[in-house]
Image (cartoon, rainbow, N blue to C red; front, side):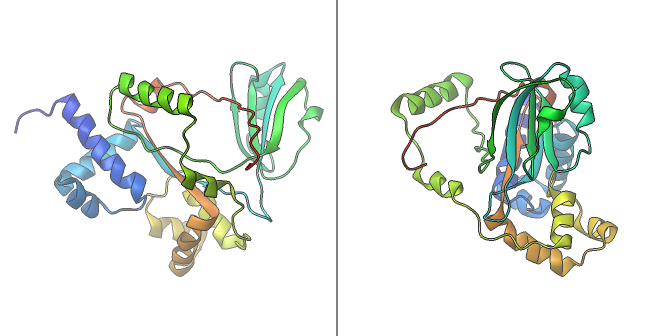
Length: 247
């Protein structure tokens, strides 16, 4: 068998990504059937994709519910690096990052916090309830074609009506201790081996399967595809102010 070209590899990576995007816990055998790639090739490709950070996730984010909300803070600190390190393991901080631009610190929490008491605090650019997150499915296309489509959608203000349902509050969240253990165990990668993790956190498989059934109502699932490796990309955060009656 001849050496596989990089272009062919990327196409095969994308075929596998499509399956994982649609079905996060899909087995390698099922991926093999749907992509028409042999199982050994799928196994090899999946391993490469994770090792090279070509695929990230599938990871889980919480939907806002009547009894559970997360809060987003965009802030400036005189020493953001010091604040970033200080927030590691900070109670109720779900996510935090250093940024560049109009704010240098982004924080997500699971309850309202007052960051103005931290050393080096300067300003809050924005704070509010974090809404529902959504990751678009990547298309296998050219950059020029992709930008053309985006510009067309922006110019025409086209939206997908079904996406408005994501803005509604999720049902009442009745997770117990075991469900939260499962969330924190699998939130960054739902494709981890299940049994060893359940043994580690002392949760029954029956509880796991029931918890999985609740994800559609209470969570959104995100799978990223970065053919050049995630480290070679830049992430941009935009803050838009919309004045629309339906919101």
